[in-house]
Image (cartoon, rainbow, N blue to C red; front, side, top):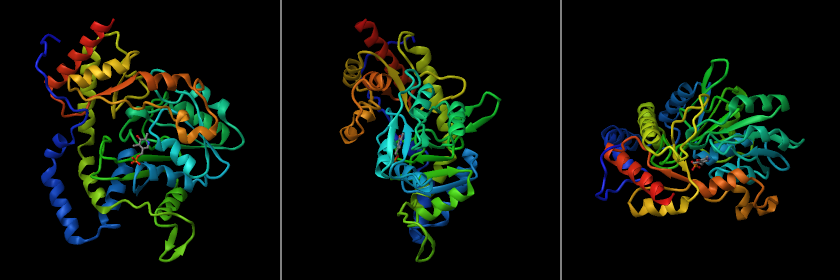
Length: 381
Ligand SMILES: *Cc1c(COP(=O)(O)O)cnc(C)c1O
């Protein structure tokens, strides 16, 4: 970088307005059609999106649901996970990952993370397996798949289900050592996605989807999202209202067609940061197995809090995903974990900082952001 940016410019962490501008005509037209049709529930747009997502992820079935959290809930309900069961997962994730396990009466069993990818450390999974373990729930954090080849081996060996929390990873690929490539959501028993507005594919409200290659599970999930109804007023299971709105489905269908381009933009912004941020700064670690779609671009830096303050003063958007590891959350005190149980997750919580990575960032904004992060590091060390 040669040009030194001195004037203050505001760089948002995420600017949905810029993305919306390019598709608003299409979106508005579609919404008006739905308002005219009044098919707000179970409109044809829902199964259209389901077909699109099944194709996109390479899964046989996709079932639209009301949110990413509900995707996790129905996935576990379909697998009969409940009271007395254990699910192994990461303590370094959005709350819903473990919250949903606990909501079903099952026990989240945490396993520390890798210090560089922030994903579950596969070398520690087997020691957590007991006779009560029903499933492993890896999270593809920040848009990068967990080590699924090894997780699949462990799951197979111990006869466990894999529930992918792929909320941040729609479109992320995983390269197996035999040369096969598969997409997130097609790497386990059930894949769970969120379309929360700030995710790479965001709805205009809450929405989610579940993917699977298992016909029986797909049928059960479809049934569970309609109160377990098999035919009108006949209930096979106690399900819930986990339906995906027609409006959300229609908007997502439009946006899905632009998703790969969005990812290219994020990846190119990430390359810019990788090249232009000082070498001493720990950037996202991307191995050849798991290329990232950069739901976040996350630095790891010892004096994170000062960097955060510095960037905020320079009007550069930033956020900490996540400041408190799940095993130290007040609501999980009953699980009996303490400080020091998962040192890598605890260090990550103290040192991570996510910076703007969205596709529509301008060259000037990227340079400005790099300049200030480098400046901070030079001044501090
Ligand atoms: C966003 C997210 C969820 C929850 O999705 P919602 O749609 O907000 O319910 C679950 N897990 C992870 C890792 C997430 O990032």
